[in-house]
Image (cartoon, rainbow, N blue to C red; front, side):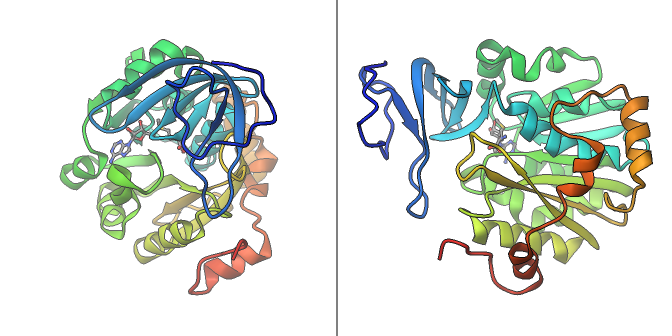
Length: 309
Ligand code: SAM
């Protein structure tokens, strides 16, 4: 795959079947593109839902790519998964019943199982993402999927939630970006279904994309959640393998507030649960919610944040 030519311009449409290709780039977004050097294409197949690729890269090790978009990488998965899961589950004193939607690579499931949960139901659309991740990226999910507390259902998360009659302590959405089958996971109607199945003291969190490159989608997600939940809080973290690096998550609940917990309580829960994260800290728990003022203003107002316009 490698021809070692660093001078070539980045390609808009990466095709791993071309033997000389040695750079991967997601399709350009709003005139922006970042690329990584690759050394090997390990897997490439169309599943029922998407094109699945596994590629070895120089900066991030092995990467899982769905429909041309990086989902997770061996070297920075810990940032995304810890920051998706820990802020929400550590602001809950006793998260027992958890629903995870998406998350086929297993990284979110592994972090959820570090908490004192009784059951985690993972509802993933595509069984091949689960199989390919276990085979090619075993360090991301570890053996989480084999844990007796975890059960995997292969179906659409939107449909599952619509017909679900559980009462849950936490619902976590680790999905692809809001296109195709994931689009409905960001809609107000889905959030109303989540509200129905969430316990009164339950917590919800979703990945909500790049504030720089997907401002309209982020704005819509935030405002759709505000239509349904009284507490909605956006937070940010860097994920180097994602386009633009800066990434957002949105927390929502019927009353529980991640900023309403004492720092000492967060530290105590981390210690009681014997969790030793590599990125998340009790200080970052609060720091990540401190937003740049242009983001705050845009969330308060009626328009998306658009730094690049
Ligand atoms: N960390 C990643 C990111 O932010 O891009 C997400 C990784 S995880 C692999 C995303 C998963 O969401 C995929 O495996 C995809 O099949 C799943 N997914 C997308 N839409 C879904 C839906 N409606 N129901 C259940 N799973 C869905």
